[in-house]
Image (cartoon, one colour):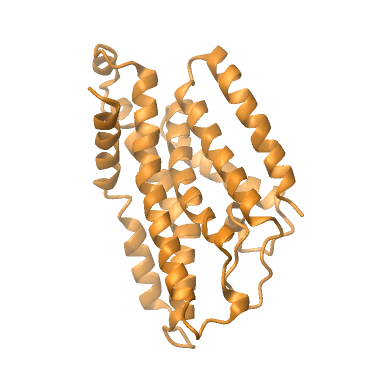
Length: 251
């Protein structure tokens, strides 16, 4: 079976998962319940798309991707997979790409939609995100999916992904405590679309490179979970480069 077929199969499994489709449902319900005092104008939809990708999306995608990645274990089919000619490493690569690529595509569509809406005249310039900030959105949503795969590989038990979610949330709160309370998710991106709130300090394009490094680290750690030597040889330099980029992107 070719890699493209494997990747496509994993992508279809993710797209068919009902948990993933909670994203538009939650966004629609939230938008309907919002009084939108200023009206549902371009500025409103600009911020709504951003929140869907940077807040609701990653939370739900994390759990959806984890459920897809842990499907074989939960259905007790792991022994059957080991008997197939496809290696565990190859399956995990396909799973990581099959989950990350469609999510990144969805994030790119959202970023493009924001760019189009941002070209309208009734959005204040101070509320617009730069090209570098918009470029972060595909990586934010894809990174959440890869984190779900990583959790399935390293914490193969019920509740493992919940531990990852709690640790990621607390990590954001502790490491970025300078960010106003209630915006803990913003540690993923340097953008901000809420009136009167200051954007997270950082250099957008370097932050794009930093997020790319985080995604690569998650994929490598998931793929080489049981291959310590390869994990060290491949993941070590990538992790080091990511940490350097993380430092450079800060003001």
